[in-house]
Amino acid sequence: MAPLVPDDEIRDFGGADPADAPARTGQRTALLVLGVIGVLLLGVALGVLLRIPLDNKADTAPSPVDVGFCQDMSVHHQQAVEMSAVAFSGSTDPAVKRLAYDILTTQQSQAGRMQGWLQMWGEPMLPVGGYMGWMSNSSGAGHHGGTTTAGNHSGPVQSMPGMASTEELTALGKATGPALDVMFLQLMLRHHQGGMPMIEYATQHADTDAVRSLATSMAKTQAGESQLMTTMLTERGATPLPMN
Image 1 (cartoon, rainbow, N blue to C red):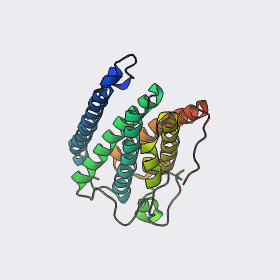
Image 2 (image 1 turned 90 degrees about the vertical axis):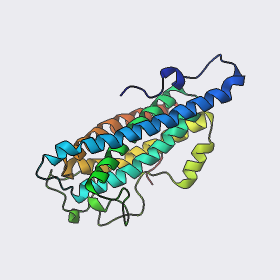
Image 3 (image 1 turned 30 degrees about the vertical axis):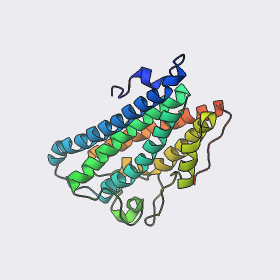
Image 4 (image 1 turned 180 degrees about the vertical axis):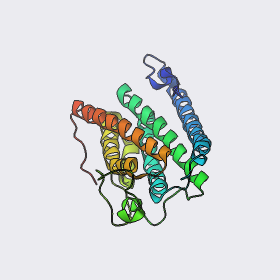
């Protein structure tokens, strides 16, 4: 996908007049907001357009895994988008800004696709009664693969692994400089690690080809990003957070 924000908007404006900083910040923020809205709308449109190939299949009805994954992962993605927007607008480290921008645009687009499918299926956009209940054997999953690497659940849980707390999000929003960079990398790495069991489960147990394909793409992308963030933390003298 072509960048929604030009490269010269992502890089720092070294050597520019400091007096112009507020205006430049406002311009970058406006472009970021417009970019996020554009990617979301594009994702929803893609989800609706994908109704054509889905309608040509005999098994058009989604399974509980298809629906549950799209609902829960949309919520999971939205927090990643929120944290990435903070890092993109607040960090002065080009590597951190680039990573934040990639995660922001990729996950907002994926969330839009999942929400488009949910709308197409006539399902609620948000989960009801907790998270990850669709990962239990009683949900009817299991015929698209062997033993899954993601643990089964006996029922819904009240919070998904890897999610940042309200206090952590507040601290991230207030952080600046290297402290912001490290906090973002730590929170986002844990966030990726916490969501991976859901992604792996969907790759093996989702009934809809499009959902399995999207989950497979997520697994590959987030594994690479997790490796990168681990390296970036080491370079900055920091360590990953324990899973919550």
